Image (cartoon, rainbow, N blue to C red; front, side, top):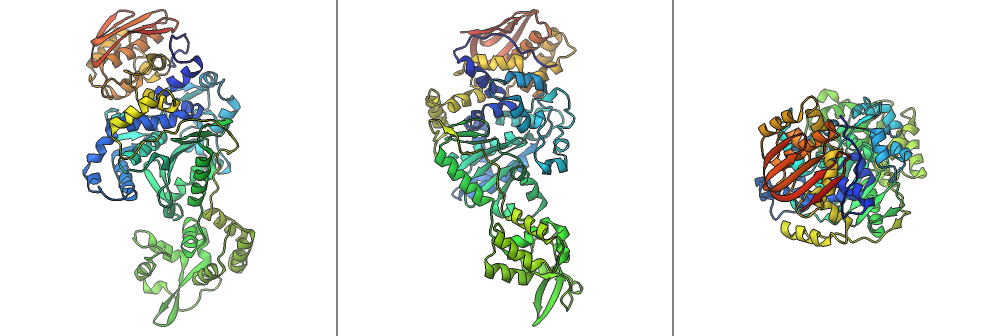
Length: 586
């Protein structure tokens, strides 16, 4: 059941900003695409949350006190891999429709632009994605009608609460959630300044570029260092898919954002230029024997054209390249790096032959050639030189050399820097600041920075935020709770809610949305009352609803009277008319 989408509201927020502020509560894929400020707002919400700060007390991180940020980052990767599952259940947060979403955001972005850049609206990417049937890979192929999933991004609280969801035994999150979590944790746990963390969003993926050492990319639960990017393994190949084959939609940073479709950008132009340079350096490598071997590892069909040579007591011995690559499997040693000799020692003697194998290029000759000539395969001259060297040994040598050039350099499809750069305050928080100091700083910045203000809505701080955006989300974008109550009258829903755990997934005066209550089967009495209000509003469209929140007591009137206990300590009078008009008073 898709919630109604109608009604007027009374709020101090500008009408043109209401959709954005309400989107900060639900954070769907489409909402983040339309309102790029939301991504760093979510990062700041996670930084304000007490949950990630508790990680500092974990033994694995306590042992690294005084160590550099890079070592902590590598440990963070293992911690996230151990603690979190990657959730690709697209229907976790229910269903909506293409027509509904396109109508909702028509004044911000055109339907054609959405279709060209959003996986839920038909985007399939370039030829690579057609070849691998990417929509089927992500489970998008079954959404070939108007119905599509919401595909929402989770706060750290919602990610942790997956342990309470049916069929889950661990915390979990989808790629955007994991990306935001990594950014917050890299800052809090690893001490990496936020100005070193750039969020990169594509139509089908989200990751961060962390400007530390030669650069690090987050990729779902994993990290990819520059050596890993070029190691030619299957895992690294999968990590490269987004930047190699998709247009980057948004780059977000504490200084602002840049969007592929919007003519205005808020990121500082020099910051964006620096990012483009650093990412380009990360994605490119000089040609060396190590890189050449890695290319062969990732393209095994070419291995049959090469051989290796070793010295054995003054006599040369030769080995088929594919034989040595087969020894890598199950071994800690690798071809062409510092462990090369140890790998050779594992090879059986009878795999070597005493003569040069006809029709195969010698890797030692190639190494000498690359080293002496300083070959750059990104240039026409470099490609011609490698082609001339290898042409006697392999067919389709041009295809091989072009692939090698692509392997050593990936040119990401980034938003054009030709934008109108708007002045916006840079949010600067120190890695040595306490959580309370950060919250106070962001609170004081709310009047100047939309991102800082939106962070408190993503944080669900109902003590300092206008309630209208939150309530607008409650009655418009919570289909899971409606599905839960599909065949139940309000009284039965009330009894089901009463039996649920009464603990909120959010601490203090912060509130969960109805679908979080429904998915995790728990919630404070006020949160349960809002879920019931959503159900009544959708099922009994002629009913007016009134909710009185008075400290520990919550009373909902509408199709009956329902009472709940709350520990949130909030006080509000909420009215939701049958037409969807929302009014909130003290």
